[in-house]
Image (cartoon, rainbow, N blue to C red; front, side):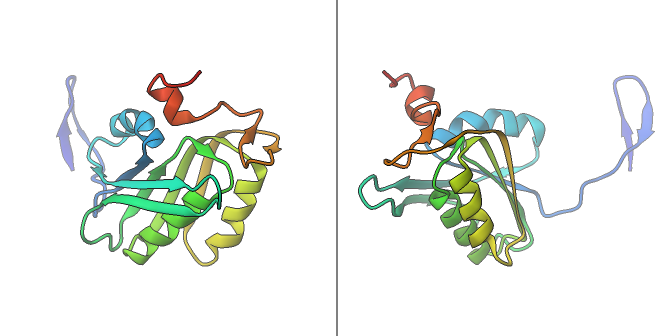
Length: 160
């Protein structure tokens, strides 16, 4: 299509629909949302509130705000810490059941155990994982070692 830049006219490429969807995992994923919105300004935004029960390590979904129909959508899931992989695996299945065509998870820090779990659970799902760094391991409480602490607490100034 023809577009007008500040300097000249040119032929550009229009991205095919549907619009991509960016889904931060509440609350820590919110810290990554502004950067993604700057990279993909036309993307829709949805939210998943998921938390790990510290006793059982089960994932609890406590909030969901997504478009009604995800059929054919490319979804970018934002979660800064990939520890056990439980939250992202649950998000992948949730989004796939809602019709997402492909899912890309973006994390800042990952543990090898979480990466392995996502590889096992991805199965036939069209998923990708991008992370800035892979730390050593998980400790007995399933925290990333050496890790960064709780990403949500750090984001909101609650870390000690």
